[in-house]
Image (tube, rainbow, N blue to C red; front, top):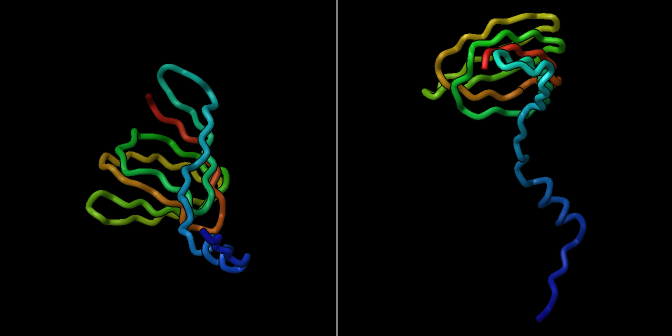
Length: 113
């Protein structure tokens, strides 16, 4: 049996050509409570969240950025959050989202359990 040898450029090209694995936003619970969730969210470009129904919530943006929501029917919504902005999000239908901008998004999210 003979061993196959690959050069460093061939291996590097293969690794660079492999699709990136999507990750989810980093979430930390700030104030444990039995009625509310207060979470610190840090999302970097490329982070995603799966298609699901989410509870109504208040989102206070510390560091803004761009997000794409995709709904079950395939329609999309693009949002550009600004630093210091506060948004009430009450969307009843399932959606996924992806951080599409070039900057990290940092926010505090408050929702009911």
